[in-house]
Image (cartoon, rainbow, N blue to C red; front, side):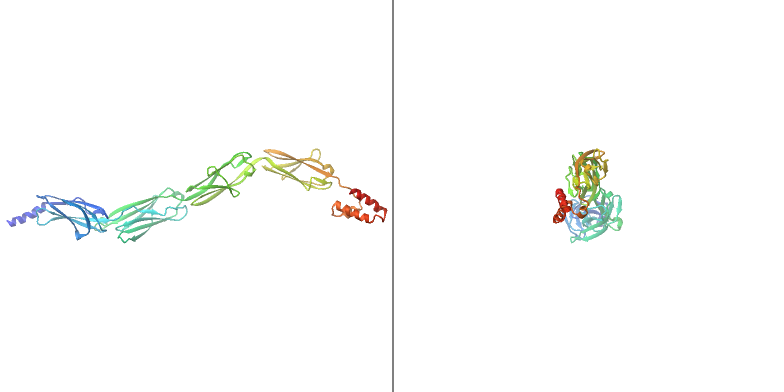
Length: 431
């Protein structure tokens, strides 16, 4: 009889099928919860289930009931759990599951993108923290191209590792708005050989936001006539948005909407060079335009040198200035006398004047936009006539000084002869 029972028990055991609901191995993140359900079919009676870890590795049991077990991983180490089933047999039936623990709690982070500047070599860093195991690879994708980075691993005291990768590149303007992606691939050994490895991948995208500043374009009419409105706009392409500053002759000008200056009823003083300088964190660029103001002549002034009253035989220089663009031509008139004289710079030289040159003179200042007239008076007095014997002794002294000296000389000789007496009378009459 005992021999018969000994034969029946193995038969009963062989007909019982024990299964666990999750395939081997089971991947769980450090600190995560594992739920396993062990079942037995073909058992004539209600089976009993027991879960335990191999090698008594630590875990935190949450619940165990009728083959179901729930627990948390508490160590950065793999656990092998065993489900034991008793079904009227002297030896329990078992099934095992390998619990592979890993740590990759958050997406990687990219740093160093705050001051990306066109044409300047840049380094961006991708960092993944609290990794276990630390067998990882880092892939960089710039646009649609895979690029190489330099990887570094730093082990932490808690048993995890920090992995960083640096990508060095020189941005161009075409990179602005594009993408750079850092992809961290964690390789988790789960069995024998590489074919059994499990991978976990997390990515960090970066939208390239470049600091750049391109050339300035100044628009607006730059050739205007007196009284019109001057409007100039300064546009520049850059990131961050450039701030333009208008200046003229070193003085900052007010602008209506930052980039545009508007000046109504312009005058001659508004002609000249206008500078626009745009600035942002990438630097500064500057451009200039020259504004030309056109109009009929104005602001005229006439000067006569040495004087408008002179003696016969003297020379005179007449200078006339005017505000004018296009440049004016100057024409000097005296009706009924000299032929008109023309000058490109407004200067006239009248030589060896006589009393007949006395009179009213007129200057016509003209360009194709209009003209203006200026008048002035010249007065030429006749020079007094001295005896021929006296004039050579005058030299370069003035006429008045010479007459005084001559008078003193003649008075000293007044009683010496009759000629001296006569000359004293002539000079005294001249004075």
